[in-house]
Length: 251
Length: 251
Image 1 (cartoon, helix red, strand yellow):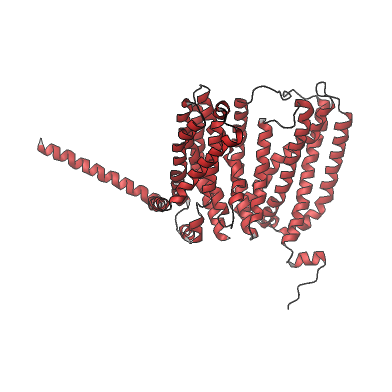
Image 2: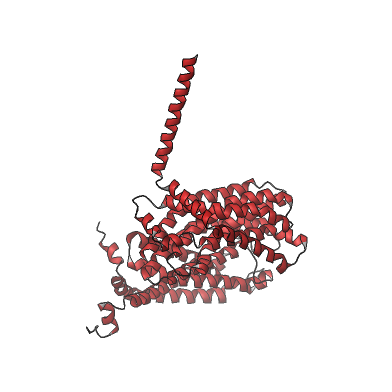
C-alpha cells in the first residue's frame, strides 16, 4: 500500500484545493440537520412532564457538550500527528480546533447555567460535571494562550501540541477526581434529572441535533483551517495567485 | 576458628564490592543523575532566597486569609485544609518558573540536551531538588499554619503526609509547564494558566485526605491515590518535560 495519500494530506495546498469541493456538502448537510433538529426539538417534541418546556435546551446543550469533549481529542490527536510525522497541516488543524472547542465548551456551560435557573433555582452549582467542563474550558484556554505566546510559529505549534497531549492524559483523571470530590463534598441538595431512559419522541430530535453539530463542527473546522492556511502560506506562490496579488518583485 | 572469621570477613568484603559494583552500574545506567542532583542541591543551598521566598509567600498569604474572611475559629478551622493546600499549590507554582530558566539562559540546558543520554534523568534530578527545597519545607511548616488556622490536631499528620506526597506531584507536573515556557520572556501568568487545570486532581485528593481525617474516617485511600498520582507523574512528567525542553531549545 502506498503512503502517498498520507503525505499528500500533510500539504496545506493540497488540503486547501480538495476542501473547496467538500465545503458546500458539509455546510449544506450541517444546516439541513440543524434546522430539522431545531424545529423538531423546539416545536414538535413533547413537553417534559416535570421540567415543562425548559428541558428543550438540551437540544443545544447536549450536542455542544459532546463536541466540546470530542473537540479536545480532535485537537490533541492532530497535535500528536504533527509532532510525530512533522506535518504542517495537522498543526494548523490543531490551532484551528482550539477556539472552536473553547466556544463550544462555553456554550455548554452557558446553556447549562440558563437551564439550571428554572430547574435547580440557581445559575451555578459546583456539580461534578459542571466543574469538569469548567476545567476543560481552562485547558482549552491554556492551549490557545501557549500557542499564541511564541514569536516563532513552529515552536508555538509544537509546544501547544505537547500541552494538549499532556491534557489528554489528564482529562480522565480530572473527570474521575472531580466526580469523587463531588460525591464527597456535596450534600444531596439537588438531584440532577435521573438518567431516565429518554422517550424516543425526544430522543430522535436530539440525535439529529448531535449529528448536525458534528457536521457543523467539521464545517467550521475546515473553514477555519482554510483561513489559517491562507494566513500562514501568504508568501507562497499559490496563495498569491489564488488571491490575485502581484508576484513579489525583486527589489 | 580464626581462619573461619577471616573467611567470613573476606566474603563480606566481596559482597560489599559486589554491592558497590551494582551501585556503580546503576550510576552508569542513569548517567549524570547523581552529579546533577548534587550540583543542583549545592546551587539551591547557595541561593537562599529560592528556598525562603516560597515559604515566606506561603506564610504571608495565609496570614492575609483571616484578615479577608474574618477571625471566627469555626469558619477558619473548616477552611484550613483547603486554604493551606491552595497556598502550597500557588507557592510551588510560583517557584517553578525559575526551574529551568537559569540553565536555559546560561546555555547549560542546551549542553544537557546535547548529551547522548536521555533528558529524563537530568529533569528528574532537577525536579527532585525543587521538591526538596520547596515542597518538603512547605509540608514541614504546614502543621504550624494549621495550628494558627485552628485546624483540628487530628489533621496535622495527614496534612503533612499529603503535602509531602502531593507537592512532589505538583513539582513534576509543573516542570512540564516550566519547560514549555522557558523560552518565553515573561511566562509567569501563562505558566499558571496552563498548569493550574492539571493540578486539580492533586488538590482534590490532598484536601480530601485532611478532610477525611477531620471527619474521623480513615485517610489511607486518599493517600494511596495521591501516591498513585505521584507514581504516574514520576513516570510520565519528566518525559513530557524533556520533549518540551527540546521544543523550547529550538525556539
